[in-house]
Length: 151
Image 1 (cartoon, helix red, strand yellow):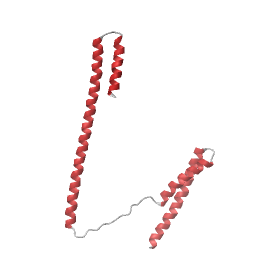
Image 2 (tube, rainbow, N blue to C red):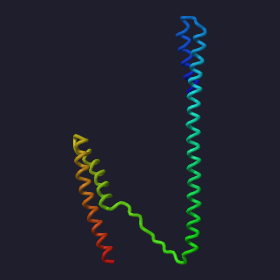
Image 3 (cartoon, rainbow, N blue to C red):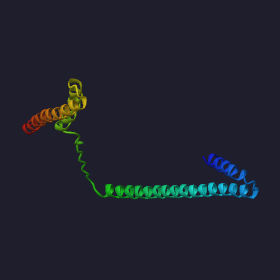
Image 4 (cartoon, one colour):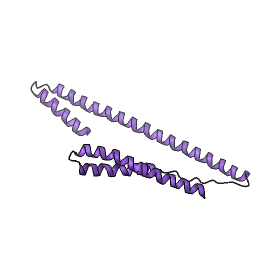
C-alpha cells in the first residue's frame, strides 16, 4: 500500500514538475512523500505496540484473577466438610416463543406463495402464522405445567 502511494505521489510530482524542469522541486516532493509514508508507518507501529501492551496487561489480570479464584476455592473446599451442589436446568425457549417463530416463518412463506403481491402476502402470513403458532405453543406450555403440577 505504501509502495503504491509512494509511486503515485512520485509520478504526480514528476508530471507536475516536468514542465517546469525544476529538479530540486522534484526531489523535495519525493522526500515529502517518503516522509509522510514513514510517519504513517510510525503511527501504525505505535498503535500496534499499544494494542499488544493492552493484550499483555489483560492476560496478566486474567491470570491473577484465576490464581486468586483457585486459591479461594481450595481454601473454601478445605474449610467446608459438606458442599451442596445445585444444578439448574437451562431455561431455553418456551413452546409459545418457538411456536410464534415457526408460525411466522411458515406463514410468511405460505402467504408469499399464495398471494399475487408477494410482499403483502408474506406480511399477512407472518402475522397470522405468528398468532397461530404462539397460540399452539401456549396450549402446549399450559399442558406441560399442568402435567408437572400433578407429579
